[in-house]
Image 1 (cartoon, rainbow, N blue to C red):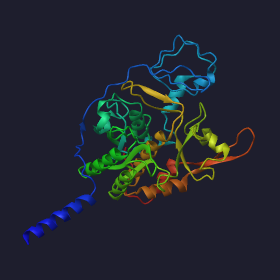
Image 2: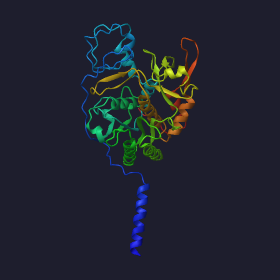
Image 3: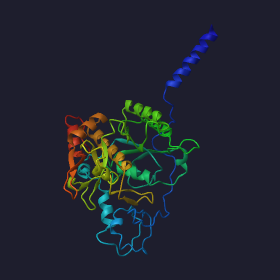
Length: 403
């Protein structure tokens, strides 16, 4: 009899264990597991006039003849370590472009001056290796942990960029938010196949970490600049982990057009020297503008919410005071921007939910169109209005921004 009871209890325990979420490794706030080296090597690519782009970060171009490459130069990436020839063509002014790109746009700097900065709100990011000393976020880095091959890498381009876009001191949407960062990879096993399992484990780690954090330091949003299909290995595991995070009061922002909470977001472009705060200077995003004119763009009905994406300046992995300018962005730059906006909403209304935030963003955004040379109107979405969005959320809220 005792043996049968023992076996039944063992079976019950096995079933409960199988149904439970995976146990996360214990993380402790205030720790930095490693300080990856800055990138010093030249990343330059030879000019490709057919493709119309180049990567001139950390490059010495002083002996290059760029006189006939004005159009191509406006499509290049460069940084504060790029050394340019004495004579640059036409109106190409890299210093001016880089400074304009630092502005997060949409009137956010005016909100920051009012004390709406994301102070006391935790943003967690799962991405590539981070340059932990960068001035944009070093003083607010509450955790840096690495797993798998990320633990072997030098600082990446991607990690510092997304962190600074979310909460950088001078370039970010929420310049006083706290940063919790996990560096991990999307390859599982020896086959080299994309697999979301590691990110699912990381989400669970952050959920567990959040249970140990005091009020005023809690993680309110996880930013992951990745996307996947339903049949991608590990997709089900990651989506289950995201559901657990949301149930625990942590919003998750990533690239997933199948998720109704994420589907409405899109990144947009800007005129070369346009004001990042002026809707008149907004333009369709570089990676999707052709689909707008061909009729294949999914936001042609004006339903998408637009935030800055192209012509952005972000933290560079080349050094703690270095910056990189990206002529063309992608959804990787859109995701942390949205996470930063949500951090501002959490400061203005601590009890806000992501669903409330999304509803308010949709209600206050402004429709935008473009008229190409042919004169036909092309609506391409609605530009987010952070001031109106936060004012709507702040009505009746007990919280007030603190300077």
